[in-house]
Image (cartoon, rainbow, N blue to C red; front, side, top):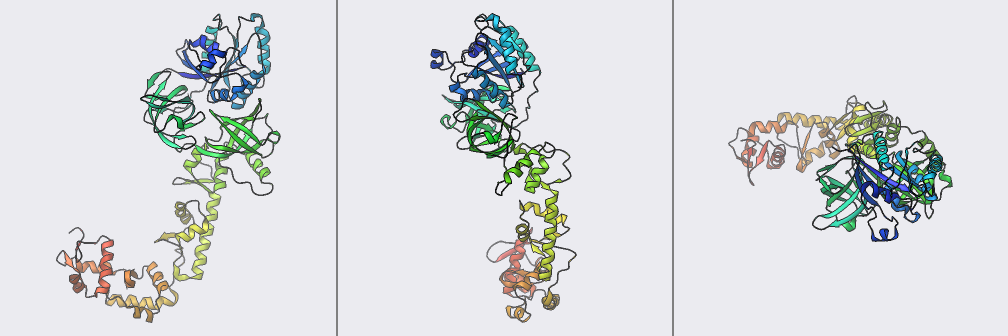
Length: 598
């Protein structure tokens, strides 16, 4: 498979970015008539070429004029490699600085610098080179290769192609298994095909029939109908490449630049984040409102500083993010790029108490790749593993000692110890209040512990060395007692030994002082069986009944069963319904039943 790369241009207006791409690729990237008439790039342009090595390179040509910085950022944001263009006759300019600052803020660390228009000032190359080295000194492009070219005379183009191959040799291979986050830069309808969106596929693999989530004004599920890259159809596209994606399930007017296609559940969609600024950013000196840029999206943010290095940003729309994502910050109404920021929390806690912002900044300052998972689990006590993955936090194997796994949950051991002790205390206290209760109900335990999810209860029960059955939690070391009702229940048990099918009447139960509470406790301890209509029998009665019923001619009537068991209809009907519910017998019609399987 041909290796593919995407390169975004950058540089001052009219320094020859589009002319350079046209000379390299033979493609006119100015798509609009207005752009060609004015000789000014307004929106993003796209072109493709092959290098001598056989690699395929896609160019995203961005506008250089200050009025179109938003469009420039949309092209630069998703690109892993930049081609910074500086004209030989004019040298470094103000907009070059802004584009450099954008490159730096976005964390783009690979690229090549082109000195263009060599034909206009061939003697300026040395001076412009010195300018470039000075201006890029504190950036990741400080040692980037510099190539002098002329798009008019086609000078330096072969050297540039060779140098680009060298730059690509040093790039890490993209991850084909990463979840998709495909930032859209164009959307348009195609007759007979429907909606097509374009963008740069930086990670992951796009395949025909993939089901993705489109995050726009309204989220919706879409299906990849077909794929193209530079006009060639494909069943699968891998990074890094320009991709045209034909979508099923959405109209073109419902999609805009800045919208994004994502693998469902793989990203954390959020509009409140905590961020760390790049070294040149002091959040206490920034305005409260500014715009932030990631991918092809630009959204407005309200900033609450958490000291100089950290801030909480409230965005005007939700974005699919991972911890570690890089933002560009740009002051509203200002030309200059304010700086960059890295996402450190995609679901930060509320700041309600005095001094909470300062304390939060201290917590963020102590975050590391090694302790982030444990601290996140500690804060939440327990968290679904899929949520951690969507946040972009790595889950190491083995886990740290203070984090354990229970089904899909990552649980903080300190929280588990607290839950365990609380549960034991609740069970013991309930036994002291009412020895006949047989522990506490599962729902009471969930409510008392304030568990993040009911499924964690079984883990707490096990850790507390308790028993969970029939909807209750008890301590096997605490023998339940029926208290004052013990003698009455024992008397009923003796009666059932003599006649298992003779249910006591309501008067009998009143005389024995066995009310609902006492009967429920006895049933909980499996000393009595309670059926509909307040019929009370021995737990052994159903099995004894079946010994007689299986000997009847099948199917049998209620009358047949009543005579065989020697009981009343009042007792028999609830007993037969109980047998039906257990699957031991089955009802055929209004009066006939048979033993199941007969």
